[in-house]
Structure formats: structure tokens, C-alpha cells
Amino acid sequence: MSGGRLLTERHLEIFVALAEEEHFGAAAHRVGITQPPLSQGLRRLEALLGVRLFDRARGVTLTEEGASLLPHARRALAALAELRQAGARERSDGRRLRIGLAHEVPARVAAATAAATSHAPEAHRISVLTAPTATLLSETAAGRLDIAVIRHPSVLHGLAAGPVVLLPTWVLSPADRAAGPRHRPGRLPVAVRPREEAPAAYDLFVDTLASRGRRVETVPVSDELAGLALVAAGQAVMVTADRALTADGVERAAALDPPLPLRLRVVWDSRRPDHEGTERTARLLVRELSRQAAA
Image 1: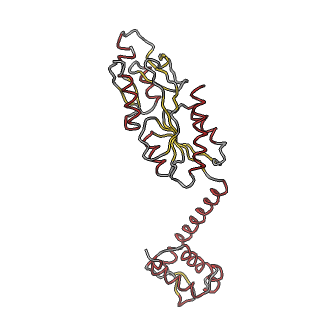
Image 2: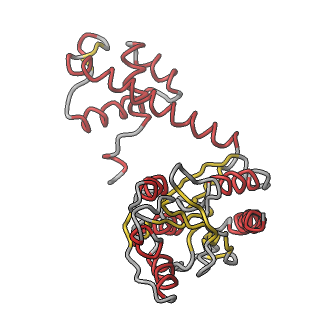
């Protein structure tokens, strides 16, 4: 769009100043320009809107159309002022570190990692997003996240990544065995999040179960609480890295046969101009993840 056909903040300032001052000289002084460019700006605004805003035959008075549009101009100027104020607050508060965490990251680990990164020099403020691994990867690649903790393995699409961290897991199964062999873990479906959230990690999990000669049937769940409900109802088993997740009627056992650790990895975009500071913070997050895994 050419500059002559662009509605600018200055056009709105001229409109409001003329409406309130009812004098070209006073309005020009208020806006901080001379009278000729003020008159030219008014003509351009009227051409853009396709209406006459002022009746010059009787001094400087609003037309009916001008009176109708004036509140809109005032609201637009107020919105622009609010936008500048929000930008100033962002600058004064410092940079916001945007962290993404896969849904499978246990709450205690998520809290510990967020607390650890809050001490990084680059992290004046932190925002945290929990989402599926696939979403975290796309958001990091697009620059809407600085760092993400994802499930491994995953296709990184050019993102840098730290080492794989293994969190121990537990198998949750129905405690009631009265119904017989149907309630043995090997005979029930495994409650898992949908495959599309982390296809490679999902396939590795299922292949690991199948490697012991077990028939693997899965049932997708929206989150671990939904999976826990199925386990308590005797309808599924589930593997979790959350050491506190339990309910009445649910047994917990370490996932050792076969081992089914939650594989996590920290990723960031090393192609960004500020990647050095982000990488320092990512390394800090990796160390905290490793500490949590060993705890």
C-alpha cells in the first residue's frame, strides 16, 4: 500500500485536535506541525474515509459524518497509546523466557526446572506452556518458544538439543484381582497419549513392550488423570513418571520388566541471534532435569 493511501496515527491526531480546538492554527500547534501540513493531512484523511469531516464554510465545525466518526478516532488513538505503554512495560520488565514442557513431564519436575531457570541471567520473567511434543517442536522452530522439554526420540527439524535424560517410571495397574487373569497388566490395554503427539516416542514405547513377547493394545487418553481413572476402573494399565500419581484401587510397581523410562530432551533454536544466552539457560535446565532423574 502506498504512503498516500495509508491511514496513520497522525491523521487521527489531526482529526481529534481539529474537532476539539475548532481552529486550524490551534490544532496545528497541538499536533506539533504547521498549518499547511495539517490541512493536507485532513484532506488525505477525508479522501481515505470518503466523507467530509468538517464544514469550513462555518469556521471549523464537525459535519454529521465527522461527529459520527470522532468517537472511533478517539478509541483508536487510545488503543495505540495502550499498545505503546504495554511495550514500555515489556522493555522495563526485561526479556520473558518462554519455556515449553511436554504433558508427560511430572509436576514436581516441571516446577523444579522452572525454578532453576528463573535464576538464569537471561530469565527476567518466565512463561510456561504445557503441550504435546509435536506442538512444542513447531512452536520452538517458529520462535514462539525459547526452550522446550520434549519426549525423545523426535524429529528435531534443525533444532539444537541437549542429551537425553531418563526419568524412572512406574506401572499403575488395577489392585483388584478378583476378576481373574483379565486384570493382569499383560492382558489389559495400556493407556497412552495419542500417537500424533510424539510419534517416534510412542512407537519406541510400544516396541519396547512388544519386545518381551507381549501383545500390546493401547487406548488413547487425553491426560494422565484420564488414564488413572481407567486404571482404577480396571480397564487399563498405565506407565507414568509421576511418583505421586495414585488412587484407591491402583497398584504401583517400578517399570523394570522391561525398563520404560520417560526419555526427555531439551531443545532450542541455535539459529536465532540470541541463541548463546538461550543455550546457557538450556544447559541449566538439562542439569536440573538430570538432578531430578537421579533423585
